[in-house]
Amino acid sequence: MRTFMAIKAPEEVSKEILKVQKVLKDEGFYGSWPSNSNIHMTLFFFGDISSEKVGKISKIMDEVSKNVVPFQLKVDKAGFFPSRGLPRVVWLGCSEEEEIKRLYEKMRNPLKKAGFNFESRFTPHITVGRIKGVPKMWKEKISEITFKEVNFRCDAVELYHSKLTPRGAIYTLVHRSELGGFKE
Image (cartoon, rainbow, N blue to C red; front, side):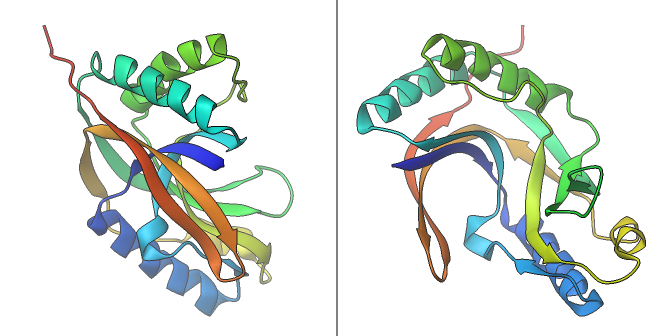
């Protein structure tokens, strides 16, 4: 089962992503574009794993989430990966990353103990598109992207099954853990 853990983006963020996608397409960018229902901020990508491992991940999510205070995220910047060469992914992200990075680290440590490995660098982002072709002056066009900044409350993490199809990925919610920590 192809699986990832994410924070679901609210409708207001999805609307801004769709606007940015349209601008990029109109500017000559070519690629694959996540549908409105698939817009999220990935925390961990697990790849193809067994249902037993899905159960382990779900337990870790529940255990960690109950001790994490819900927090605000502000989607307020655009960027691309990789930082050198042609872009493969254009994304929107958060300039204030402290809380999301803290959640990531709290999840990462028990997941590592359970046998999962991840890149050491985490850049919180929401994918706008996976780029396959770019126009001339593409870097300037990305730097000129404008959108309405969106604040939203992060109050849960979700585990999804991802099925790849010729028409794009289909995501199915497998598990949801609500954040429940309390500020002292």
